[in-house]
Length: 277
Image (cartoon, rainbow, N blue to C red; front, side, top):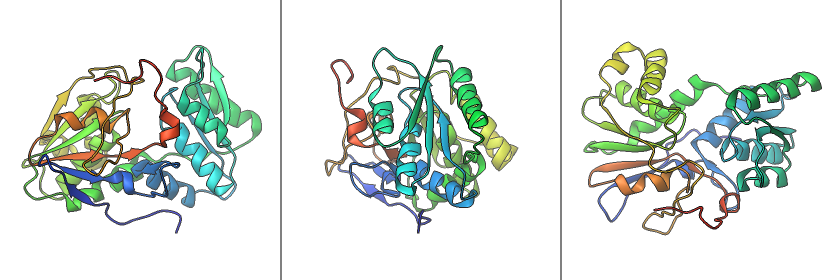
């Protein structure tokens, strides 16, 4: 089976919080990416035409370029990424390139630019890319709420675009747990995935009542997204240095750390000054 549909485990840690192990979804080994986005993307690829290629325009440190390259390599499909040009290629982009992705570097590096460039490349080559389905991703995440402990006081979620946080809120709403369990959003970007954007997604896909009664708290970005932070679980499992590692320090007793996924260790090799905290 190309993608998985079961619940990922929720594991108790010595400090008294649980870890929702979405990083175990589609896990093969430390050399390949794993997690909810891999599971979701695999499902979207399976539903797409057989000749659809894999493509994304994203930031230089984004994990999405890794997912595109890894799935292209695994399925023997062409993979294309557009990222902002840097003086030195980011390790994530380098990993994607080494695993078969065709890299287009853009100047300037604004999101509107790299997204436009990847669309232009697809049009010029006459290719149709697999489309990312926001709705599919949201409801896939919502299903994973099912095995959270009933006494969980907060779900602590590292936040990029807001998609995972919105899916968790939607899942809590569908499970009639919305008021009882707070979603604590730890921002890794302050310009995207804001509380208003998260609630807008919730309202659109789960209804206005879900957004109205959502119990959320917000911790603004405390370090640049491209800076890495070291963190592990009790068993030594490394946390993604751009996401979960930046949120684990806010977890207390009866909390749940939502670990969305983990990119390959080789794609986030620490360089001087990269680690903080």
